Amino acid sequence: MTAPREPMDAVMAFLEPAFRRVDPLAGDAAIAGEVAAHVTGNSRLTPAEQVDIYRRQYWLRHLDALADDYPGVAHLVGEEAFDVFLRAYLVAYPPRHKSLRDLGCDIVTFGDGYAFADDVQAAAREMLAYEHAFIDLFDGAEPPPLDPQKLTSIPEDAWERARVVIHPLLVHRRVRFPVHRLRLAAKDSDAAPRTEPPALAPANLVLYRDDNLIRFEELDGTAFALLDALARGEALGPACEQVAATLDAAAAEQLGAQVGPWFQQWTARRWIVDVVV
Amino acid sequence: MSTKPPARLGLPDLGVGVGMRIPHYADLLDGPEPARMDWLEIISENFMLPGGLPRYNLGRALSRYQLVQHGVSLSIGATEALDLEYLRKLKALIGETKTPWVSDHLCWTGAHGVNLHDLLPLPYTEEAVKHVAARARQVQDILGVRLLLENVSSYLTYTSSTMTEWEFLTAIADEADVGLLLDCNNIYVSSFNHGFDPRDFVDGVPHARVAQIHLAGHTNYGKYIIDTHSAPVIDPVWQLYRQAIERCGPVSTLIEWDDDIPPFAELCAEAEKARVIRDEVARDRAA
Image (cartoon, rainbow over all chains, first blue to last red; front, side, top):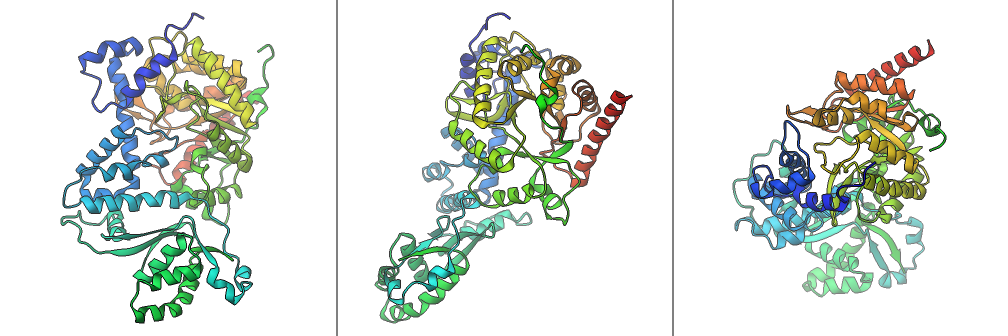
């Protein structure tokens, strides 16, 4: 065999950026000579047209993958504006992970600095963060379930200082727009396209995995505040005190009676995975 | 190689299988009995995950079927260092599935830290043979199971190539002592796109190293064909398959269908066609 006429590195150095160019190579006279130095072409296609096959597939593949992950954003901003947004994202953050699962790893950061239309700007950014949370939740590791025996063995007076461990995949966040309901609407193939900007509808959302399905739940403000304190690692007693301090006297009085049922409910939903004394 | 390796490198002939894809999970995993399928191929990367639904379904599939791992991210031809973390996860999955071999594509998928998520052809040069063979040998040693490299569909050829694709494939397989996953549809697609006789490809590879065969459909755009896995296998590809089985003997065969996925019964009918050809060739060889 003859010696190589061109190092592999030179081929890859030229083609890697060419494959993800925004504009076609075919018809670009400035680059035609360089393409022909690397790629043969054939009787039906020029070298640039051959490279463009891969370039088109690059965009189709990555736009499709992102569209699958962020249907709610598309619903909010409209398909055309969504396509422009995704293309801008892929230019700013070319794919660098092996799995398409991680294609959107920088999309929330990018969206925070991206100018969506004024009437959907805030909702789109909130939706982007909400939908991004689904990715880790879908295939994250499941911790061992809470051991009921352990609960019964905790002395009554130890609960005050007990640390209630929240499921590491559980996502809880306050939203200003009803992103959870808008996303459901977006995934409904019979849904009409959105015509009005989304109205404010603040909610305290919990996103969690149950029997391998992702579910959401809205909590009232007090329950959400307690869950948030526990998730930050506060012990049960101090967490309750922190929440009570934000309530009026009557509501603070009721808190003690509410904690038990919440604890049972959250345990049943596997939001609580351990109690450490 | 001074001695000829045994048929299929000594790996088993598993019969005919299909790719395990989500639209067919109900048919494959939910019924009271396993589907009539000799084995299933899984995309390794879809299950190299810590938990959730993919892992749950993997467990169900393992309880019913022989699974074989096929990857899309190894990037054996890249000039960047091998991704040892990826190989660690791949090896962990191999430990779970007990796959008799692991396959991936003879390609590069990216450069300079960018992953294009495509199966990009390599220049067919002596430099590339040495580079890929050294990496393939290293990967096979790390994984502890036989590595099969698959010929890809390609839509361009390089000015720097100095040999045919089948000479390239053969040189790497012999130098690295790895197996081959012969994709008959990819041979057909590339032969159309680059103007060679696909039968020369099938005749030209080292038959004893072929341990698996892929079959699939494609999309013909007139001036070129794309390997879309979105249609039935066409007759010329079935003919290449027959030729491959005649040369290689019975080899584990898999139908791939990844886009416009049909009802499971239609996929089974494609698998049955492969079974019929295998049986006919076996009868002819016995006669």
